[in-house]
Length: 247
Image 1 (cartoon, helix red, strand yellow):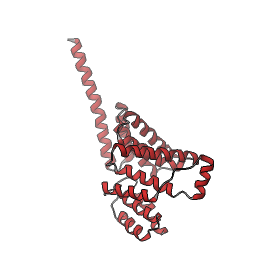
Image 2 (spheres, one colour):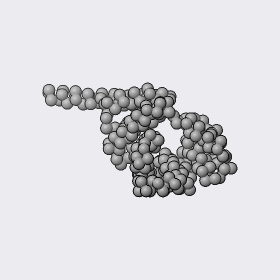
Image 3 (cartoon, rainbow, N blue to C red):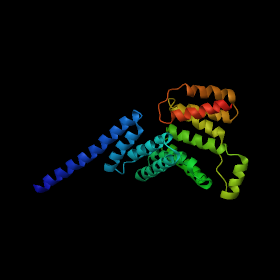
Image 4 (spheres, one colour):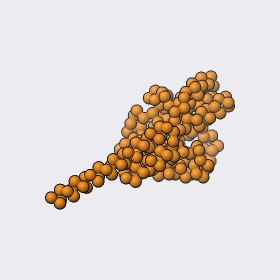
């Protein structure tokens, strides 16, 4: 009899533990949807204490750290990017066969790259592409994986010949990118999820980089007319407006 009672108590405690994590995660989801990034992060981290190996939850925490960055100073933003990467890596370890954890690593590396030295940037760029490729292989319908690969090609294609030659001498070379490949990835990202304005804006910006000014103006203006819906949309529009200004 005592054994049965103990079993029931343990099952009840386990259920309450699980429900509590779920409740905090749902609160985090609601707060994120309302644009309350700091509060969402706090709620997700309370859920994390009860479910520390939940890959989906770890990805959500990584995203909140990344979303906080535009509102932070340089040092704090770098810390947030590093925290985002740390949570993303934990998510991959918890569930290596799911696409989103690998995508989270690629995204976090992309946010951390501006704060790295030259050699570290090259290493990060290689890992970023590898993780984005893995994310896309695991989920061919991932618009954000296509977007990250588009950004990767965009950045690599923009490296000048002098810088590339110097990097080859000092670091053994940098990966090659292609504006054509970038454009194709943004096009695919846009076809999968047309509501994300970042796909539209980066499609237009890539056209500008290719010297297709008239097309670029048209596509960028389409993106600028779209309503902001994600944390980094405002920053994406600032970048797009600067591209228009430089045409």
